[in-house]
Length: 471
Image (cartoon, rainbow, N blue to C red; front, side, top):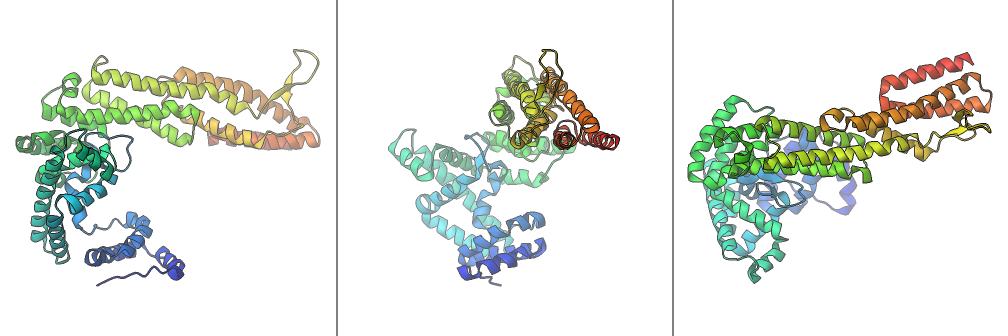
């Protein structure tokens, strides 16, 4: 069945409403038809509709219709990444696929490429599995060899390489192309590995380690250069990526982190280290722009789990290459958290100034009920209180417990007398004073909830109600 979608501007709103009413199951059915239509006619309108229903497809998770491009990417699919700050061995940017694919189609093997993709498309539409697999295997071999040969013929700094650099979009894309070629040279082994791996691995179990070791001992004999990539492919499916180091210890027959980090199989460890370093740098930079407290807490928790798990799996030595990096990145993250906590008391207490009423230095300090706390400062105080709360869970594990205690004490030393003074004004004051105290206490409850949780905020609300009754 051919599915053609007209995207005239007059019908755009109607189409959006129609697509919005689809169930995930109906969206999956529509997607299958559109994918088939794309293969037959390369209909660009199909891409627009597929994009519009992508959120529904994520719920339905239908089997994806095979296309020549998807089949091309299959061997290196476990290494694809959506975002990265730099090229890393073992990670290929999704953004590099299109320029490499176009390079193959237009420059490297245009005639072979056209014939292969046409034949593959027809085999897919005919649902001829044997023919599809045969053509896919040929495409992997032909494309990998063409890319590798082209790059080998272009020395660093040569005019040809510089032109290709501009054409593809940068040296990182060239590096990705070289890695794609390497993996395509062992495409059958990479696909065999994917066949024995679950899509998601919550925990690394002995049965999987045994299966992987059997696969690895055989595959590494024919494709030794792919050994690190086999390990990274497993790591990217692990719910706890640091468990891959247990796998590395088994297949490398080495137990010391210093020896493993110096080997090819150290690639997985280096990637984990890079990820932890990126997290540590983000946490260190947080004082300049704190952002969402929950996201900050998630980063700290992630860093703690990764660093502790990594060290536990290998028994990291502090003077080794990885051990030294681990100590530095944890110290960097702790420095960022400490800087946040040093600043927090001023930010949290800023809207709640205590004024000295009286001519003497020892005159009591009380809230100024002639003016309510500034709204913008209150919202800022609520956010900073949430930051203090978010940083608490890993304070001891990450080494900034004393800074957290100091910040909490400083905040409590200011806010507790402020709250007590407001409750007293609510009980004993009159008219405008009582009204201002009630409003200020309502604001204070927001900060208390953010800082100490629902239970403390609810307790304050009950005290406010009791004070109002006692007036």
